[in-house]
Image (cartoon, rainbow, N blue to C red; front, side):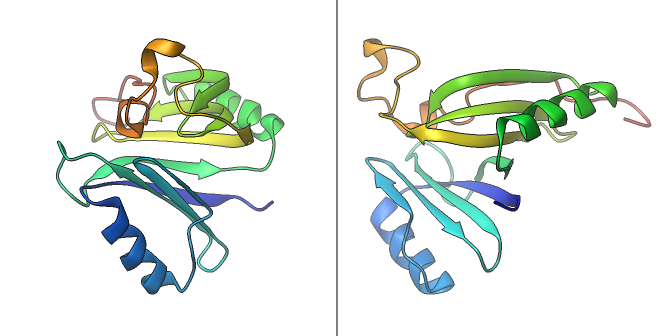
Length: 155
């Protein structure tokens, strides 16, 4: 699989958002779960994630990412980012947003959260954190890590 950029948006009405993006991209979602949907698009190469969260502004950014094909690519990205002096948080076999993933998080200069990840398998939401998370919305999970953002000149 070639890499593709991920854009995760907060939406207030998942059904309306699915309808709009299905028509915009001429494609149906790859996965739909309560409060969550994603589109794995080839043209343009994009993973569009919709997270229903009535507490956040509709259309606001939830997080960004780059989906890669293998765990080795995640490990390589983590080493490259750390080598570049960026603070990272790694998660392996993390169950979040209805998938088991290996990922590394990095914070952008504006506080935006980026993940570089690969999907290992489908999962039930909240599998990682246990039964106490049953019924939580995907917005409580994604992004699942917060990392420091670079500051100062020359970031």
